[in-house]
Amino acid sequence: MKLCNSALRGVTGIVISIAFLSGCAINMKVPIKDPVSSTGTYDKTNSVPETTLLFKDDQSESDKAQILSGTIPMQMVYQDKPFDAVPWIAKQTVKEMNARNLPVKLAANGENGTGILIKRIHIENHRVSGFSPFVTFTSLRADVETADGPQRVTAYIKRAKVPVWSFDEIIDPTYNDSLSLLIKELAAKINQKLFHQMASNETVTALIDKINKEGAAQSDSYLDVYQLGFSNNPIAVPELVKLSSNANEYVRLAALSSLGILKATDQLKFLTDRYESTAGIWQDRAMALKAIGDLGTPESQAYLQKQRENFKNKTDKEARWTNDIIALYM
Image 1 (tube, rainbow, N blue to C red):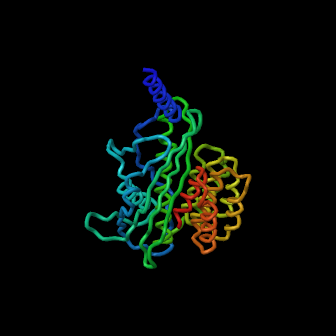
Image 2 (cartoon, rainbow, N blue to C red; image 1 turned 90 degrees about the vertical axis):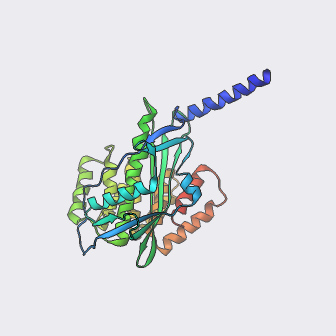
Image 3 (spheres, rainbow, N blue to C red; image 1 turned 135 degrees about the horizontal axis):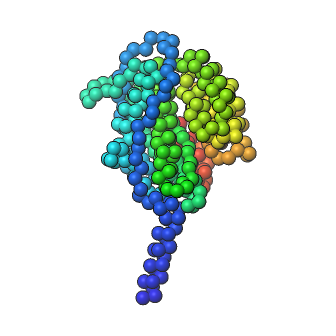
C-alpha cells in the first residue's frame, strides 16, 4: 500500500509539473486562421507572365508526422479539422502573391506548374514555467524549381507571449501571427527567385516615414519593418540597419531578418558582428545568423559551416535551436 501511495504521489507530481509548465494547456486545440494579405503591391518593372505554381509535399515521413513539437503537446486545427500544412501554405501563398500584383495561380489536380517543394514545415514551442513566456519557433524550408535548378527559400520566426487570464491568449501571437509572417516571407522569396519584382521607392520611403513618425515602440510596428524586407527593394537596407538596434525586441528581429530577405550582402560583416556579440540575447544572434544564411553567398555559407562545426558536440537548448537555423540552409 505504501508503494502504491508513493507511486501515486509520483504520478501526481508529474501531472502537476506538466500543468505548471503548460499553464493547463495540455493537448489544447490551436485554431489556425487565414492570414490577412499584404496591401503593398510590387511595381511590375518587367513583364511577368502568368505562372502556375505546383506545391509538392517533399517532407520526410518523420517530418510529416511531427509538424508541431516542444514542451507542451498541442493540436493544430483548421476549420475544425486536423491542420494539413502544405495545402494551406499553397493556398495562402498564392493569395498573398496575388495581393502583391503577381499573376500566379495554384495548380489544379493533375496540372503541371513551377514546382515549390516543401522540404520541412515545423513549429516548436517552449516554456520554462507557468510564469514565463510561451515561445514558438516557426520555420519552413523549401526549394523553388527555376531555369537554373532548384533554389532554396526559407522562413524562420520567433514569437512569445505571457498569458494573463487564459492560455487561449497565446494562440494568435505565437501561432497565427507567425504563420502569417511565414506566408509573406515565402511569397516574397518566391518572387525573388521567379519574378524579381519590387515595391517602388516611393512605397518604401512612405513605409519608412510611417515607422519613424509613429515610433517603433508600438506593438505592431514590427510588421511594417518586415514589410521593408518583403518589398525586395534595397533602398530599405540603411533603415533596417538602424532599426536592428531598436529597443523593441520584435522590431530588432524583423530588421535583422529583413536584411537577409533583401540579400544585403554588403552587410555580412555587420551581421557576423551582431551574431558574435556577447552583449546580444540569443534571439538577436539567432536572427542575425538566419539573415547570414539568407545572403546565399559562398562567404555566408562558409560562415554557417564554421558555426555548424562549433555546435556539433553541444546539446543545450540554445545550441539545438541554433543548429535548427543552420539546417535550413545546409
